[in-house]
Amino acid sequence: NYLYFDGFVVLMGTDTMAYTATALSFMLENLGKPVIFTGSQIPLAEPHTDARQNLIMALIFAARDAPISEVTIFFHDKLIRGCRSTKVNTGELHAFDSPNLLPLATTGISIKENEHLILPPARGVLRVHTRMDTRLLTIRLVPGFDDKILRHLIRAGAESGTLRALVLQLYGTGNAPSVKEEFIECLKEATELGILVVAATQCHIGSVMMGLRALVL
Image 1 (cartoon, helix red, strand yellow):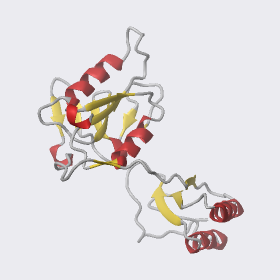
Image 2 (cartoon, one colour):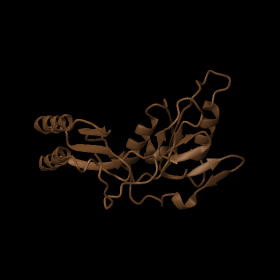
Image 3 (cartoon, helix red, strand yellow):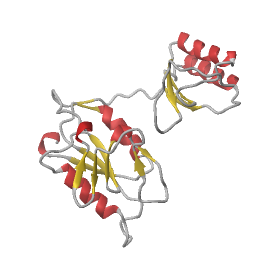
């Protein structure tokens, strides 16, 4: 039904909305129409619910003459890129944010777009990718962790074929326990076993800078 509609609004619970929007961002190649996720912090049946405003604005963005044609989340006066979103608050109406990227648009008396962030029109026909490899593991490192646990996970995953990628959430700009030889050997073994190792930062703002190094115990 893609060709029959100008845009799509998806209503769902907030706990996994950022994950779903992120996945769909990569599943819909050459997307030429807006796909907007929204929901509410307060149930729709409550008199003071935020669902009405979120839904109305999501519908407005989906039906505009100059739509933002990508997967997004509209929540509490902000339209944010789906694959850059995260849930940041469980007790306030400002539930979602994209800490490392400005909102695509904000609403108030008028709609204000950050035009320099808007993607160019898609080229080619829509392609939907439904096969996703979920054989990955994300580990958030903490000081003092046991290297033996990581080594066991890598070996068990490689032997069973259930681990294809390892995402490590590291400190700061991507610093790892570089003075722990066993940890470095774990990563070397993972790559030799054909496991993709990806470095990410635990920080909400900024990025990994592999050229910078620090001694971390």
